[in-house]
Length: 177
Image (cartoon, rainbow, N blue to C red; front, side):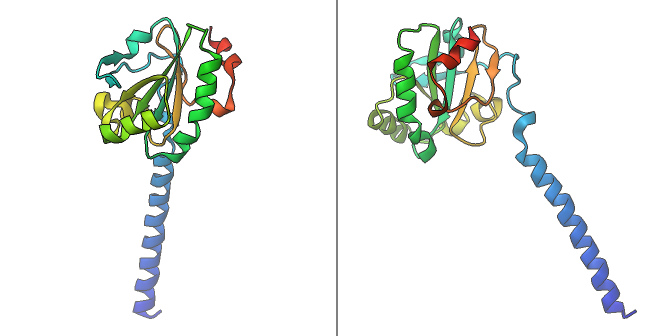
């Protein structure tokens, strides 16, 4: 066998092996289910600034079912859920057991504030700049947005990947009472 052919075959085997190992690593990294906040475990607490500049903590909503939305002003899919969420909020306006909390992962306060005003967002509006403040991205495994999580009255995660507002109605929350 020609020595160049032999080296070529060895190189090809090495390249295929490296590619195989890399593909397994990429697949593993795309599986975020291992790092989602665990259902029935305490939701990671946070204290973030709201639209008025006041500190708001997850603990402020204890005793309520909290529907948390992670979003950003530049996210088109997030904006598509504004009208359905507004309708959902309206249908639950007489239900003091449910609270809506929107956490923006915008970098810019200006962009976030403009989006809140432009979209006439009603729920509690909080910001975690780039998701870094209070380790929001890490603690809630925010790798893509929009993302919804439901936290129960006692502060436990009830659904770590909840449906978008357009995919549910007010009756959905009855199961968490």
